[in-house]
Length: 318
Image 1: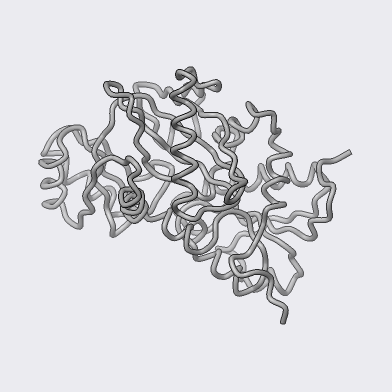
Image 2 (image 1 turned 180 degrees about the vertical axis):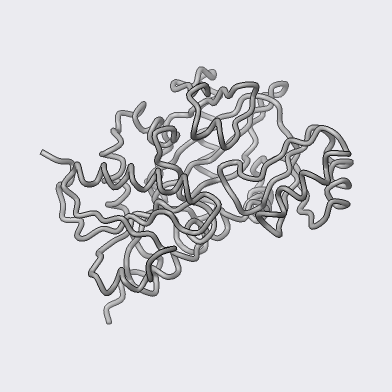
């Protein structure tokens, strides 16, 4: 007997896309597709970079599982198109998706709401990057303001390294973020659900080789350690979960998301880094890992997320 106890209709798993995270998206999408097939769901792969989104309506798709990452998939653009087509989709709506992909806007809202996030500057030149380094100190993180998976990220230790770090980030995004580095434990925290029903899953603590949790160590090596249970004091884990839930709700997220948090080693203060509204679903991904610790299998997670597919404005009647 499968987990699919209701008819979910014809389902499109959106994967691939045109962002710098295309490769990861294809891995996520294929994993989701196989899981849905195993549960008897009528699911089909759909790559928006190779097909017209209008085909979703013409071919009778009832809902979409968004396994796209980064721009043109996680940023509100696809969500807006699906709203116009009247096809429910997984994850956050247009506004929350567009805010969450923009790290600077996310940090502004969190700061305005009193939620802790590292200090930052948005820069548009190597000179501005050097100014940020002088204000934030070493080390400093330089990264594209609207990318994920640590693509284009540089940890800057010296003033001389600022220019190269800016150039690396600017090649991917005209908006570049300089962020104060927080030394300590790195954790990630998934959330499932919407509004009052939002459920925070177990905290995952990440221990990467030499503390370098980059694109390669995220997806293509087996040397990074993921600790669930996380090993943090019980009260500390609960406080981080409460913080992440508030961060999720503050941005208006729905369906699911995963927030990345750094815990200052000296003060044990947690700092919100960013929130992903279409998290990875690969063999190395952290939402499935946390869900498994909560007793939710990968297959059950995929079906559960698909069941939450929705529209911001409801299903059009005309």
